[in-house]
Image 1 (cartoon, one colour):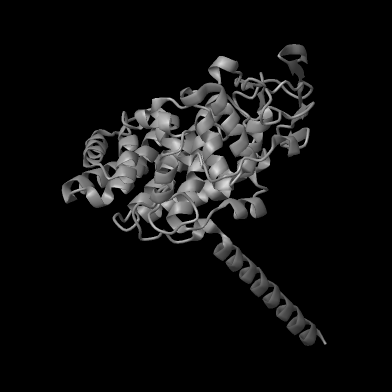
Image 2 (image 1 turned 90 degrees about the vertical axis):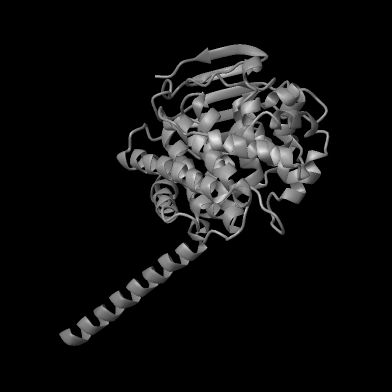
Length: 410
């Protein structure tokens, strides 16, 4: 009798173990961040040939649209922009200028908020120009990317920054794009991608899942983290053919869509930021750098509401919406996305119900031909999440053209 019971128990344990293994194996297969890097160039952000995302042909068509005309003068002032001009026009002078700029690019020292941004640019430009580079230049740039990647690995493994702030995602973005760009030409590529998967996909992404995509720190979150996290997803899509958005929606509560939604709810009429934490920017200071994150996240998630908000934002500031330093990210403004009427959105939204607790309310959403004159209410029912997190639960603000009422939290 005891032997029969033991046999049954062993059988059940083995069955459960096999089911668990099969489930984990299935999850790994479904995870786009486990997909192999394709042997194509370019592969970072943009592709040649058939691809559902951004291609050289699609960008060439978009560059002729009125929306893109003012930005092209800015492209000609930076190496990445020169490379874009070369890809869509074939102009050899643009290619030569881009190569010359690549040779001068350095990642340097200091905060990984900035170093991550520089490493992404260096690795991206290397990928875009790879087939045009001589062997000596390739070798030199590969070594430069490898050294910066090693430094990023050290930073991430050491956990040297507040978790929700901008340094760690900067390093993670640098590792992801470097691993993609170096795949097939450097033995370190796989190591960089493994570190990114472990500390990025399995850890940092879950932090943004917890806050449902909300920006919980200083303005640097919108300057940098809201750029680097969508950049990772855009690069992964182009490099593997697998858009991470559906998986993030299914496995991580759609934090990437949450970034797009936060832009919509966080900004008051005139595109001023809600005065919370260390993020406040008035109407005149809320352009020049901030829209790029919305455009990248909206591109990857295929957000028609994000497209609508971005078009309104550009209608307010024109080409001044993008500083020359960030003009290369204008490529993510997808003219093929149909802008959806904002009036279809709900009038209340909650971010981070188990964490930051940001509640937003609007009296209405503007129609496409009308200015935004809604009454905007913010209420916090959660706690500070990082060093720039501001006050705690209980804060509220009522705003229409100017603050009407407010109370700090406790």
